[in-house]
Image (cartoon, rainbow, N blue to C red; front, side, top):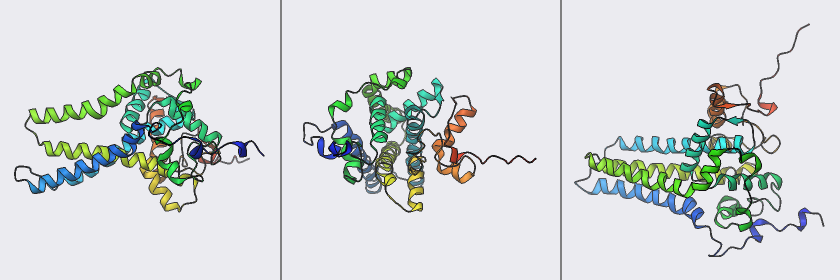
Amino acid sequence: MTPDESIIARSEAILKNWRTLDWASVFSAIIYPVLGITALLVAVIAGLALEGVAVYWWYAPLAIATIAAAVFICNMGIGPLHRVLQHRAGQLAVPAQIMVMINCIIAMQGRMKDWVNYHTQHHHWADRAGDPHNPHESKLWAWVGWLMWRDEADLERPTARWLERYSVVRFHDKHFLWLYLIAHLMVPLAAYAITWALGGPLILIAILHASLVIGRGLQFHATTLGVNVFGHLNTPKWFDYVLAFLTGGEALHGHHHEFPRSALHLPKRGIWNRIVDYNGTALLIMNKLKLARDLKIAPQFLPAPVPVRN
């Protein structure tokens, strides 16, 4: 028996019952997106059915733009978290670290130390027993099961040594529940209160709030399903690019386990590459603005060297 064969699959080894259910993850993955969809439907129906509530046609494109903005904002947290804080493909200045922290709070990614520890295990055991989200064991488990049922030993793992030097990460992980309450409860309540006090359209705020929640949920599941499941399966190229748009390029996974330490997931040159891999483009822009430095790029994504003529 090989060492790998002696390891029980995570989807089988972790107890799955009400006691071990991680309700924070259930809320983030299922309840919160459902609340967003329900709130949007109720707001639209109320606007159409009630005489005292007005819904205008231009609310629709505004809601779509808000969903797209939420997807983009969440990716601006997860992309740098994955490529820089996890795989150390560069360094982030403190303002950039704060931006990543805020965007990860909006994306509801949990403690950064847990995120990094789980992802480290994934790279060590990728697609084998021991992988926290191995789609070859169970696609449903790799999608949401591994988030909903946790091994307590995983959550007790210490912070990775290279993360300890980031004071922003330490602050986030110490106070993340309060930070989430502020971002996802107090800020929306303040927006409703200010709009009501000024006599503004509360129905519009409700639609925008619901759209933000839906956009966050869309990005969340595009990442867990698109990267953890489809990223490890053979899928059509067009489908990979659809997922790339929803994940900022994180779903472009073909190179990743061979060259994980890369700020880019597509070649540096080419406007299409920079649009699709917009997480990498953001890091290039941050590098220009001195908010990031020492970016490392997988060799296949660098421009080909110009031959020297004798």
